[in-house]
Image 1 (tube, rainbow, N blue to C red):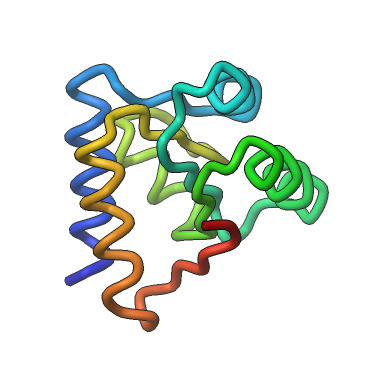
Image 2: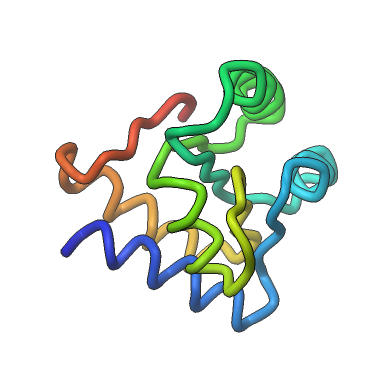
Length: 112
């Protein structure tokens, strides 16, 4: 149930036009200080995970490894996506609250 809430927040942010998806767009959003939360699929390559760990730690953006490529893509209404960034403060805060509430939903926080 909690897992669906996080994906619902991602979908809501997508419909509001406040989501960037795909590696290049997410990196750009983080560098421009627009990203409030970054989600990376758990089945992403180790290179991608390391890249997002480094960039999110440097720019102090919360990063969670959550869901599969297909789940993230479906929530965004697109094909499979390895990463997504929520740019809306309220929706990002709500998603972070859900991710922190239950540790059993598959997400893992990397940076504060």
